[in-house]
Length: 357
Image 1 (cartoon, rainbow, N blue to C red):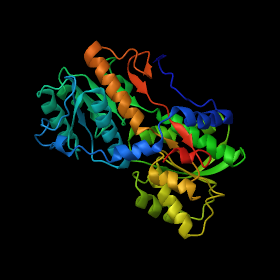
Image 2: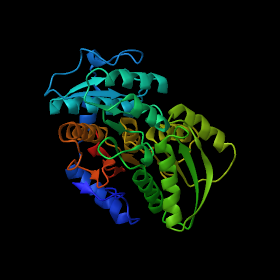
Image 3: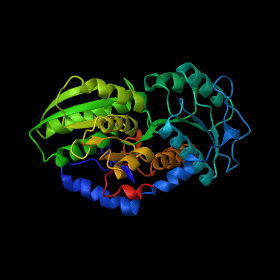
Image 4: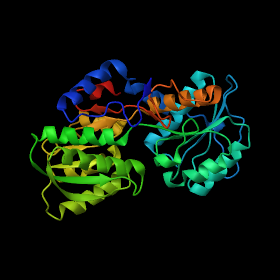
């Protein structure tokens, strides 16, 4: 299925019915959460190689001859799920996937990609340490195509059927968050919102934050952002920052977090201070195990499912298409311009959270 340029699947139309449709869709169209749990246990230690001089390795699974190299930054919960999903999807497709040891720096990743390019691989799947440095990674890859994943490069750094991005559109996640908050609070004309951002400069943090603001602006809601700062995707940092914020005495109607980990930190602080999370929505992104459990427990009210399995499958599908056919045309979710493969987000609240186990 080819999508027109810049058209994204499941983009909200600013009507609450869109949210309800997406919740219903999850019952029939998405992989149950327990599969993600299974995949998180799939750790192919034999295929891990060092960032400093270890792109090759004997741990690659045998397959149909296609050799894929995967490189990633230091892992967090979602990045690990994504790495395991790429590995598992590659195996199922009969490809040999080598997982590079997670890299702590851009220099390490550039060296890793350069060695992979000289070691007989057909394509590289890259979760970049820093999306601002993808040109260095493309140069290091030589003639090999590169599928970027999870951390989105700027569009002018991509090239159709050569340097592509596979992921979920961050603005969709943000619009779902804002839509939920606005509807939950009765569609008020004014709001006081606290926003907890991820890593400064990270594409997901920037787009998720901007998307929330764009939604409210489009709906003519007068929003005062009483807190708008980073907590680096981290639970404890968000916990500490929220306690500091409470000391300012500023009013707030909802807390919007760029990921579940930060939302859990806010919920922890609210619980300790006796604040009612049923009245003050705390929302996140990723539908992690912890985030979903918090919704079941009455902590977080809402999150957005970012499918690591779906992104891993899409990255492998696009890789095979590029190597065998020279084009990603026909890959599910590919845009007409050949630059992106979009994997839809799905909204999650108390009504459908048990679909994610």
